[in-house]
Length: 478
Image 1: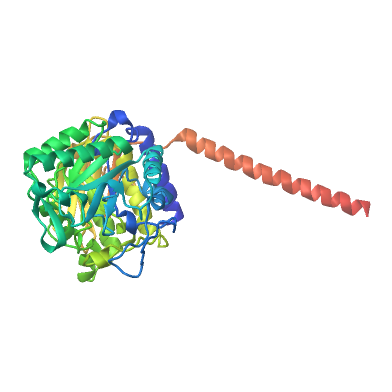
Image 2: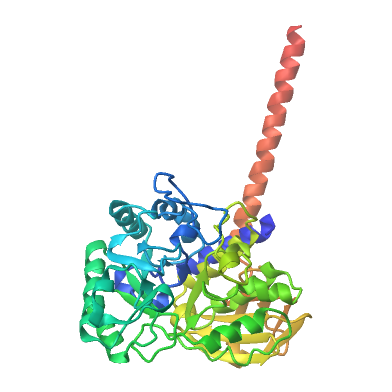
């Protein structure tokens, strides 16, 4: 971003800060609709210390790579600066696999990730940064060496060296609930992502959700699996696929993605799917541009944004070995800066997070909608097409005596003689226009600037005269 555009964007966002709701992290405003989630695996993020690198082999994609709790602390500002409010860090229990899925013992943290003290430090540091920590809690499919293998009545299967519990067994259910609640009480986590839900009765999941929420408020409980349980967000595989397919290329149908509600989880990939970059690359498209457009929609639509680590560097991958790369922090900052800017708008505007939406146009990648509340309104234009697009908005939509201020392209749009606001946007760009009262020429500001300019010129003249006088005096002395 060029300096003058960066400066203008910064000034407009500063104004947005002054006129909009305060940041979302205060406990009084706690609601998952105010959150945006950044998802990672501890082992794949950052290796801060080598003292816990037991049997680490960074060259083997199936082995532990060395990431740890202290590594997340080291790179916490990276996540905070992008504007995310919640960090989902995967399972943290003793495990046979780097992704934490093959749990050995819920009573012990994975030693390669760090010590209990270091995990507690991670929680504390996150809270100091007004961030929340969410851990993943698998309900099933553990290592065959799990300590619960001795509980014969709980076990449904040990096929393929995987311990599968009978999740209809009341004792197994209670053990899982007690384990999660004890862990949440011990460390003060802020949320849980339940996984491996297959075979779990909805009533059992609801009891677990209700019980763990009693530990603290807020305590968010989500899942990236479809379920009828009372999760804080609605996950839909269909919506995820539709978002991915809408933005992997230009000029694609977008009718299926604009009816989201405030509890929908918005994501274009996750740690179990191919990377979004993989699909955009198959289309011979430039992944960073595709990611910008997709995130521009996700962060301005109703719903809870959920981004996989590495999206900010356009990480690629078709399978786990490829897509679970160790995070590379030495990359171009352009995409990261874009995420900062678009997330900043969302974080500073309650309207953008929980306000109403009015769809104005939606056809094959060109989407225009209004986000509004009693306090403010925005016009969001997503031109995910292969050509420049134009829309004329009437005063019935925008309001009388208004102007639209582009928060990225820094343009100001006022009504023409017909009372219409013409918005023109180049291809593959998302723009957010803040609707404000129209301002005429600021005479006081112009006078102050003119006076400052005159005084500066006068200062230069005085300095020049002083220098000339000093030079003459030195000449006369000679």
